[in-house]
Image (cartoon, rainbow, N blue to C red; front, side, top):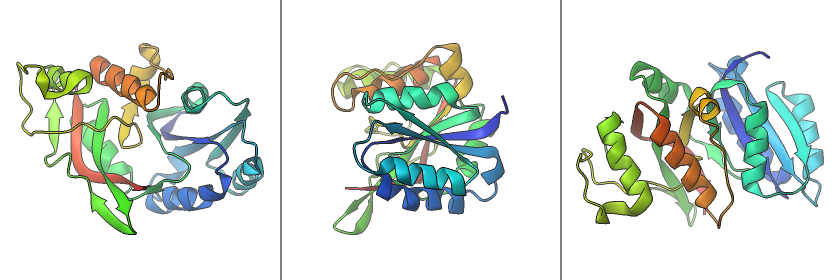
Amino acid sequence: MNENLLSVIVPVFNGGHYLSKLIESLIDKNKDIVDAMEIILVNDGSTDDSSVYCEKLALEIKQIKYFSKQNGGIASARNYGLKYATGHFITFCDQDDMVQKAYMPFIEVMQRNHCETLISDVTVSQDGILRKQNRIVLDEVCDLNGINSLVRFYIGGRKFPLKYRLEQEINVPNSIWNCIFSSCVIKENNISFEAFVDYDDDWKFCLENVLYSKKSIFSKRILLHLED
């Protein structure tokens, strides 16, 4: 199995018409690593013509790997994509996202600081205007002590006393599309998505990756632009 630098996993459900914009942004922003990047589309039992869009894109763009499965929800679609991911680093997009920045500068920060999980800030489009969330105001590397604080944010916020404080007051996003993960951490610790309710599959996946990472990093730079 050939190993890539980065795998981008995209669950698809009745949203194939969004994909061209996402794929275009992925390719355009990542020309420097495009030959070392794979885009994994997982059609999760769509009931519209999403499969037609996926198949067309897979024929046209060599970086795309296309898979189709019975409907099982977004958590199962992401897990399906993880089975076939060959990248050293893994990230996720939703079908209607747009990539704002190149991935390589984020990956370089992870490599330089020996970090296995990266969490970035995001923008959200509100009434056509991009607004930065400002949840992360500093670039900050968390070692095991900082990870202790980060985990407490994930499991209950600031109501828990923090033995080791982070350099910034932060509202950690419970999401995975603003993160980059190490595939080694995921595979060695059998980390996967489990559907509880709504966003809890993101929460568990992020929490476990942080727990098993020797170092994690916050990035104040923006990785994705999300539509409201």
